[in-house]
Length: 366
Image (cartoon, rainbow, N blue to C red):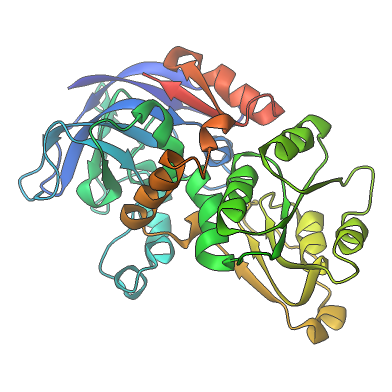
């Protein structure tokens, strides 16, 4: 069918809205009519070729929509189902079958390779291939084909205009906290970065019962917003030494848990130094391939800390996304306060507003 999509053509270049051809869904795929898609930092860094996904490409990986057609082998979805789209994974490797699909042995190929595993693409223009299947979905399109495994069915009355970011950015921050760090009631956490991922982590920490929640950033308006959402303390690391302030707030002890959502090497170092004895820190922020960060192995050896590298919140989307929706419906996870919507034709404005920090989580409406 003929569809409309936003195509990334070159680094640091606006996406180009074009008419493309979408092929038929494979036996294990469904065709989804997109209702909305979040704009994520990962879309920008892949457009800019931090990761070498072939261009031209249809990016987008926080899609939500309605099933329009189902492949012959699909048994758990039907036409008309509302779905939120998650990252791709093979489903058969050791990591997938033990409940950790975000560490699928073929994660890079499935999510960044620009094709299906067999080398085919879902999109073409005048017979020429356009990279597709980004995160298994390429949701910057009016319609797309995705493996049924990637699609999470939600309730018929679910607000699809809001739910797309649960498939990546919101899942990443909240999953890192709830699935990996696992703070308990009354415990402490410091979160570096107040973008969508960091604030989702903060909301998850509040839902988990943490009572000392320290948000670190360099943008005063973002820090004030974090306080409005429930942060107990904020630190402007442009004005103060973040590690010193965190230790002051915690009586010299440091925090039991910490999360770096920035991927900035000096910030990662601050995160490790802010931890209490036997504390647990996690990194979710993406950096260019080959980026190295300082890690004081001399001093930190005796601290007993744990540092985890976390992809997509180490979540099983079909299990975790419904949990986030349930928390949201109960008023315990108000991630909607992070969202600002844009028309699909304004996609490049959404990218610019995300990069400048004007908008925390842009969501495109089709």
